[in-house]
Length: 282
Length: 302
Image 1: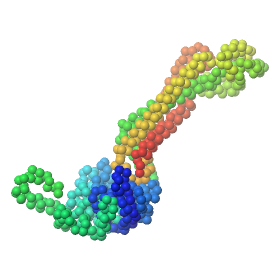
Image 2: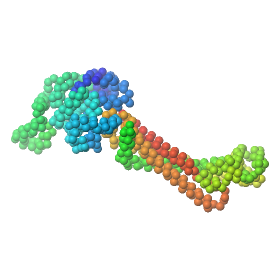
Image 3: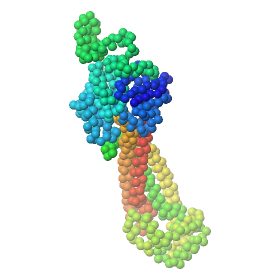
Image 4: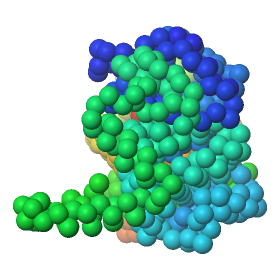
């Protein structure tokens, strides 16, 4: 489905390579997490797949087509096989949910009839069938991201690219998003998701590709976020908290911790002033 | 397909509406610049009609009596050929001069209807060896048998010609500057339109809308701005022509000479005005098209 062969890419503004001789293969229907610190090349990887950027050297095949030799007039048609979801949703604020999803089909010239049926199907999949006429700013962050997923999926792409789709969302909402992505993955759609979300990667146990400074440092089936074992105390702690949260509701967990902190008198007296505010951030 | 066309048109007008102030500025500049171009063309055409058609620049015209006999005409013709003052001559017979009359007075059918082919004087249009000899030629020929009158451009006409040509140059220069200004304004307008719709454009690119699908509404917007401006400019040019026509008519009523006046020829015919209008509309569309195309190429790269 997707094959990278010694792909390198650097930007004019940065002497370090964004990707350095990266080779890997992703087969149809896989669910891949792309992890690594900021600047490790995750977004470049996605941009190359979208053919927003061309590699300096090396080749990329998607569905049997080589991307850098593809004529620029063919790129739009190629992109119709991809769906995209971003951290900042990228919905059009002056269009309703329905119009936002329909827009993706309108601009590639689908007939009204096709648009009507596909849009409502897609909105049903993400569970927003009843909010079709709302505007994006009337929705919660999680709901907006679900609209974005509906838009990305409405043309039934072969591949869904997600760049930190849960980056702006709280853990419980993130899990909802992951359930939808999982549902979409079951329709044989390949999903590539760049993320920093430890809890989600550890919970899903899918293939993990870890990049660092543009190089592949780990490619693991049923992997977790960090290297084999979490090695810092902080990672262990977050890992543990996430592990508990899987299965139980995240909200319950937060409420429980709030209660716990309120009851501990000594700390309360010291941090009472901003305790209330910081609590919800988690 | 019809769906995408209606969509492109809808998008175009939504853009125009959202960008109203910029669009207005662009349209106004197009109006001013193309009106200037149109006025310059109109004056140019008028002057060309008056000088070139009528008195052949530094030439001289011998009008024969309409009923002059063949021998009279031949006599004058031979004399002209042999004269050292005359370089060359062009003889307009009855039908030639009648056609010329019809052309010059096509906006005044009353004048034309007063003549028939036979009652239109025949004319010798001559080029002088030395333009300053005009008076001498006038004195020599105006009393020849069969000659009705000798017409030659005075020094005033030559000066007028110079002044009008300088004025035309200035007008065309200003018009050119204004055309550049309107190009830039359309460019900026389209740039603003692209900027205000950058989110939509980003989504369109992402979901695989073709380049032309994204570009066409913006280019149409620029062309429509150019066309609206050009249409108004040509209306102004038509208005200018009829104002000029009325002024000349009034002057002629005041004048006592029965001779066809030079002034009447300075008004371009309505036919010429229509051609100028078409030129303006086409150039409006071109200015709009180029301005928006450059903007689209620069700011809408895929």
